Length: 274
Image (cartoon, rainbow, N blue to C red; front, side):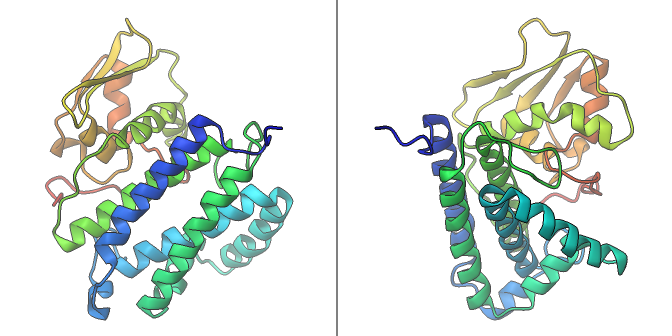
């Protein structure tokens, strides 16, 4: 008998890509001396330790959401309510607390937590929407979001270390998520969701083309897939990227695009990319 909780091919592929993306970031921080963990990243006030601590913190909430929706809601209300009442940003506090640990302990916690996430998402019913800080998501979408965030914070670490990462086909997941969150990005800025669709025609890392969105759409974004992913994760400023927007919706979207939940971020200043 087939296990109803076994990951589908789509989910299984996403989880494999999430594991691979995590391994790339792991390779950047493994062997860093203690002082390396205190190196500043492009995120204001965040060191490399803060970046890994944030991923560990988010992994904890992801596993809880996948295994215990009611427990997630209760814990979210208690913990976030307590911090917000004290005027503390829960995300900042989670990163600060985690970054205070010894690097060896922090790295071990992140490694264990991300394995827990892979197991929890693989076991979650594929059609059940899991609670989250933003809109609820099915396990496949949650895995995509975790991959996006791992890649984005990995970019901050890579920038801090002055290294470049080789773009991979895993960027397609982030590009897909970036397009799906178009309406959310407008809403985050108090704007109505556009009624006109947008199409992406992006140059993949292997030189091919990724076409996402309806053919014939009047609004189109073209350019390197890497640049689009850097944009929707707000790791580079719009002016520093080789992206072209055609049509009023695409033109209005690119400066405010974000593939992550929560309030609009500060993004990066023009010319601040590594």
